[in-house]
Image: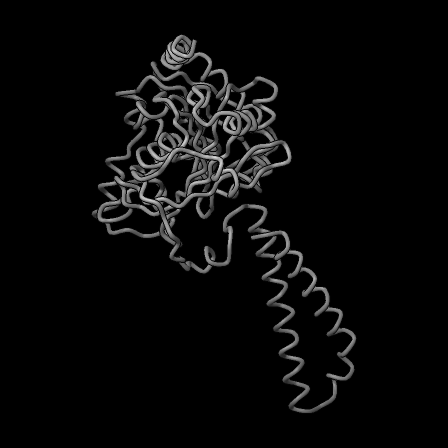
Length: 376
């Protein structure tokens, strides 16, 4: 929800409260009409107060980005088949939101060729990419960028990373200071069905979210931005943290590194599913078994806060399960709970960690050397 909406509700709540105080003596007269007006006034004030409080909580937690999301209304939005996506052009920059420092945020709705999901993807191009694109859209330099997926919680939307987490600011700083090599931020929609928690899984007879995130989103960005075949990074908070750990361990050919923030490590569905489907998904997505018996060669950064009762104990237990060749790192947040403000504090460190992992990736380093030789 926008700050304008919240400000409007605060103003209406205050004005209605003042209005009732001023007119209460007149409403105190004994008549059916005045009794009805007194009851209506109190109901309106309470409704406005509760709605304003809800908006404050929503904006703090970044749960819903619009009234349609809150009410579960799915708008029919024109989408592009993922396999028909064309390379990024100057026309795409014209429809993008350009930040004061020169980053471009491009919103696209695509239909995944593998998952058949119609979903939104926000792509954040750093200033260096935008500048190079304007100079030469065919430059080989555009093919040397890394990519990170940023996942929201449930409920939640990709825009939470932009507003509640202030991602663009930290993303720009990390690349301007050299803490991170040239990198693209990819913010895909993970909550596809209104008010249905799918935990980023391929649901039996339902939406194929894992396929969407690991195949369609990746394929789209490679077509759109001409990205190389190197492995990506992925991070997310809360439910997005679970998704991060699951995607990294189950898809090591797609993701080189994952940074789960305030995560849990087994599916925790907030909405009901048939018992058979639940049993099937829990067996298929047992990442604790992967961590102990068949760990892949990936990097994992676990962000934990001892004051976060919903995830701290699980994070500590999961860290103890991880075995080589998983490269495990940990960050402990002191005096922090389960909220965006706490997680925003650690964003610079997370981005710096991704930067180190990317710079040490032997496969991508080799690709860069080959590209450099070809461009001479």
